[in-house]
Image (cartoon, rainbow, N blue to C red; front, side, top):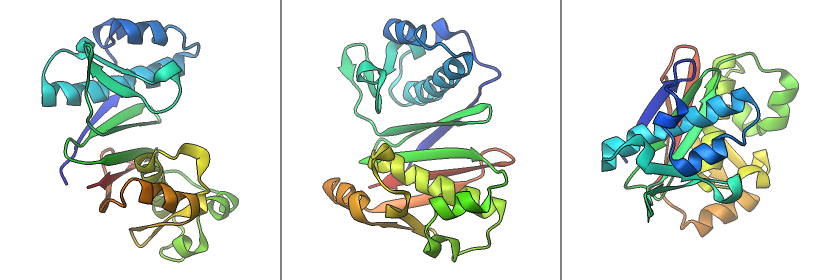
Length: 209
């Protein structure tokens, strides 16, 4: 199923008032840490570029906010809801957004490839996942992004155990609460892809048809 990705460099962002709607600017001012402001602005810039290309309008026409600033945000254009599945991510100076007009759900995760300690791998990955490949930095980062993309597709956040979402040989598997959430979504057909969008980074996209 087709999806569209936009990546932005957080070190070269335009002024916030050229990107954000009035409501977004008000929330943006409540973010105290400059790093958080930059990541938040970058994610919205990436998604708004996709929205403008798909539905037209200007960047500031769109508002991407979560109720009370907590949870997954929704998109409006003026007063009209824009019910298009999307997902946001950021890592080490970059932000990315994915948009899938024909999907029922989507998730994306971008991570810089870096060394992972053995204890972290044992806590985060099920033995069946680790047995499917060599424990290299590339493999573990790819596996991490795949699982995180699936978490975002489900919309489950931290409510599921990391072992309840597994990727073995590139194939998603759900157990426990993750399986219940997946079934509640209608058990959509899944596509899980891992891409190289930037040198030294790994990006995975999970799409529910």
